[in-house]
Length: 463
Ligand code: GLC
Image 1: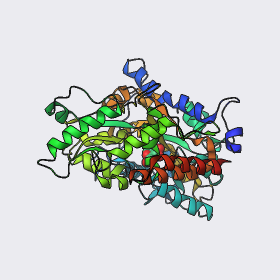
Image 2: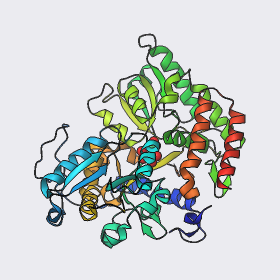
Image 3: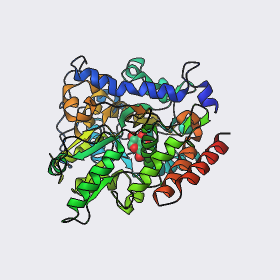
Image 4: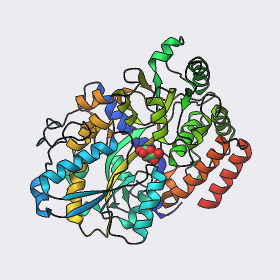
């Protein structure tokens, strides 16, 4: 345990991870509340715009509410990270165009690898070398402890009212040693996507409730579909050696009540339930999942499922964008991930999400703050929810009828699990131990000895 955990913004006596897990439920919870008609909207404005044309066939982005102030910095260039999956990058680009047109501030997008692990490594290198660019960074919710030292305290730049628009638990995730180092942008959970037409064709009336059920349904559908389509797979997920695999593996292990690799201060992964979950996942590769799944990130799963080459896919909410114009539009639905089996088994969804931060060496901090303010505004969050299917990081936005309609997953049960971020700045090293070990298992190495070694390496890391 490091200082961030002990002295962070979490009330005394509450373990950081437990707090996060409990808190993140707020995202789904508020959405559920709103689905029952109790939520409050933010009123008007999503479509409101000066009418900037869309290159990507997207509707125009909303007007910048802060344009009058931001114009003071006309002529400044703000370099900004722009990671994202599916249509996430084009909605961000669309917002950038709108902001540029209204304020005269130029937004220069910095290409980053799509894998959050690689994007983190790239940002880390630049920041550790005291580079002034990028001015604005997009930060995955697992990294604030490690990046905090390089980021501005946004409490000095945003109003209390602006900060209060977000979920308090997400503000807590991004508050390190009382400094708000990033402002929440969107959240998300692991979800199961399934082909409604194929379930019907093969005589299944509902999506699988457990992983063994998914295994047998995928086996049957794959055998049938492969007769005409050799590329067809039963189940695709993120099996590459990167952060996405830590999320998948967490879901498998937690769903079997096998813990979350490290629970509180204790490495817990060397237990029979975790081993059973990982053995089942190993058994999929080369059977219901292509052998290449060990190199798949979100993008490859999204392409395979979108092309009509998979019956089931694990992904985040953004993949709902396949309802617009893909081969499977109108032929799929979303469900909670399957549960494990045995005592304490549950459906389990990794909690994900991103926030916007400003480089403390930025030479354009004022303009960068205005860009951050626009990008994370309720209007922009609603725009991204509707056009990129991202779960807003503000309850009032998640409650909007248009957002609810665009994100059917919001109405579904979610049992969120936080990754073991209680290790603070060491999280990336811990996760690297986890995803490398699990990737080796998916490639066929022995699960029991692999779990033992993973546990030993994690103990050595966190001491
Ligand atoms: C999504 C999640 C993020 C997670 C990543 C893993 O971007 O929002 O939290 O780390 O996927 O690939």
